[in-house]
Length: 74
Image (spheres, rainbow, N blue to C red):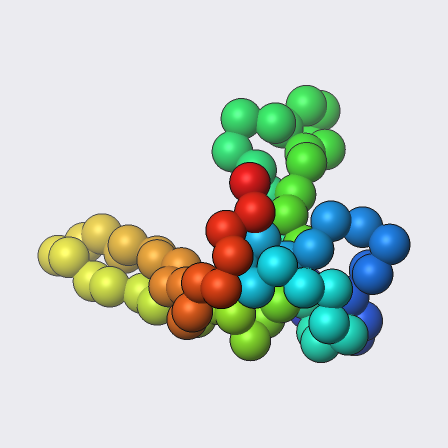
């Protein structure tokens, strides 16, 4: 996961907080949009999410936890 320095304020707001605050974002791929190693992605503030990993025997489950939803933008 690549963390960028600045949020692209001319793009879509963060789908979690609904703002374009200049806070470090990450790009999260949108499932089902991959075409020849290129896919659509959502720009999300890093501070709006938390990633967790869970072990279940030989499996590892990754989960993205939303810290607080102010406005869900889809």
